[in-house]
Image 1 (cartoon, rainbow, N blue to C red):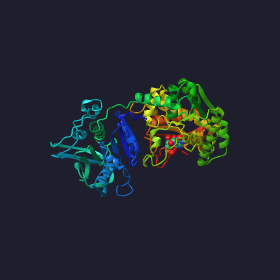
Image 2: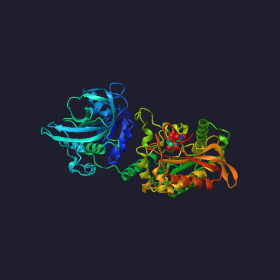
Image 3: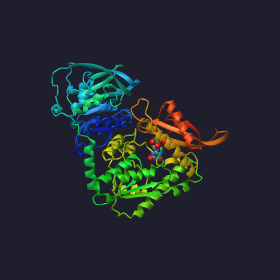
Image 4: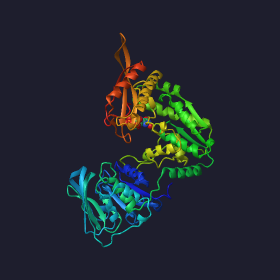
Length: 564
Ligand code: XMP
């Protein structure tokens, strides 16, 4: 897919910020692809590649750090080394990298100094020039004139600049590789920017992709547009056209089955199927475990019908799930029961549909699901995003038969949202917070009963509705949009309270609201106290079984986002 499009290839050596490099460049309107750092660079992989970025890594080049395919230095494509990426280029090309006595970490001042050197790509230096804005650099992506590469030949250049970069490394370049010049120096006196004198190879010892790195976006933009001469052609409209053409070609006349969870990803895949294939060809199945949020099942039905779904199967499995969970208190036991039962019901119901063997299974796998954080893409087999994060025999069988369709597997989460909007999915669905596969079962601590599900559903709905209704302190959007995930959880404790003249014994409820970028780590959202107090009052006034409301002030780590 996307082979016709120009792209920037990112070689992932395992840094936690590799995915960010891809994000930033896509935001410029240029398609990027992240592949494993040591992936073979075959002709097919390099088709359309205008530049390669070598990412950072937690490893050292002289230790267990992996090396790129040597063809990278022979193919003539521009290279940008980021931290480990530059160290890698330095070692591979005959320089020396050694450990620092003291790590360079956080904001570090960098001085750029070019004086009388023969530099092959003066355009790149614009990245460090405070007089040149990001917008000016981005304009290069649109215009044809700036696409000619201008080596500086023998003329000399003088340039100096200063900015604060963001660093995180314990190794330094003690000898540059032949042909490179040191164009920038860190406050502690180590090389921070290195440029090759003749080839379009540049490297930085810091992380331009990190938002608090000054001139970071400019550095990436200068590389992409001024060194690689990419055009801005990555747009969602264009992607949709390509993905739809591919979907039609792959599916042919065969039925396509999609298991809908109600979340953003599977709903957007549903919309894509419904807007691309004849409606009868798309089969959508949703299993209501009874562990869903208030009005969730009706909402899913309404959304899909509005998108034109005809073959929509809503499976009511509440009784089966609650019966299986009866008397079970241990979190892992509960999760296992739900996961296993989900698979059993899924297989039973899919068999009941009687689809021909040739049917395809569509999945809402995202690009980020394939990038295993911190380990490097491709080191692990494709992750399969199943409803409960456990292997599903149905998905495995379909994958082995080459019958899986994953139309979102090139997209980041916000791109999926943009795609959803383009396809006419309601804003409410597109901006929905994540919800765990086992649903309310991991938010009701201890035994799950229908009564507790109902209590929690009511309280959670009040909390969420209020977050949607209330403005964030800076007034820009709602509190709901401000937080990454919010929900209520029901504790297995009852506490004493007063109601009129008598004592009352009510359940304790926890509200949780966090900010995060990917759910891997999370910070507590700092609500204005007024909002918390008012929401607490509304819950205890409306849901009589709840006697006390608390706010969870634990970050992740050490706590997880969910309670079980
Ligand atoms: P934790 O609780 O592990 O959650 O900090 C991180 C994110 O993952 C969601 N989550 C799940 N999602 N199936 C899912 O599809 C699950 O079993 C599951 N458990 C947690 C959680 O809501 C949060 O967004």
